Image (tube, rainbow, N blue to C red; front, side, top):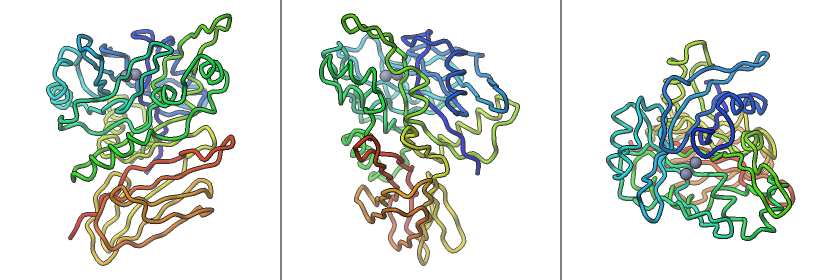
Length: 355
Ligand SMILES: [Zn+2]
Ligand SMILES: [Zn+2]
């Protein structure tokens, strides 16, 4: 398997972002990304998917969409759609129909910023997902950069501080979002977790201070989604896009906060007597399932089963652990950075099904 670093949530000048597709792609290349998916609000732009290249590095830009019902009051329910072949915002009024339409158009639906606090000091509303009765979505955005910012920022002074020192913001997915994910997983289906920057690169005016808050470049070095694909990027946009959408559909992915240290190289796999599974995949319980966890750095690593911590390791880079019970198993890693214990890696689950 080949690891691709992707950022899956960002806005361009086609909606409320401040960068063009080309300038964002250049920033992503510099930050070391392999894939970006732009997600402008209620607009799908056909024909822009393309490679960008600099020296030996190559990046694939894919156009997706973030859809919401502009007539809804209050505003809620943002949906990220990847890989659909058509404009979907006309279906925004009914979240279930929107998800069905995204699926029928060959796309994947992910619930954006499921829990999103209001930030009234800056006129930012609570844009949480509320229509939890829906079915058929591929997954949720477990860690959203903007929601977390809204959670830690309470006034203008905070705003000023974080505008200059964004590296102090990220600590992990919001706890209610993690709980929501575990709750959805406990219902038996697959729910894929992704991370998203929600990058806008907004110019902010705080009295006399003018600053672009959280430029794309910063976002692309922080919360990313690492995907595992059978092949590296090739030369055919159509084939590569299908390969990336497939990894997302399977959940062959983890969310990595790459700012404290690169999370590249992390792995979580399972081996049974005659089968193996990657993150996002199912494996049937036989005599015992051996998990292997590989960490890029020896930090705190937790194995979670059905939402409950099962075991914690510290200062190990390579871990093996045998389990004999079915369940939804996932891994969380934490790292010390700027005086705080911060979330570093959140894997997608391996689903150990009863035999
Ligand atoms: Zn949104
Ligand atoms: Zn967004």
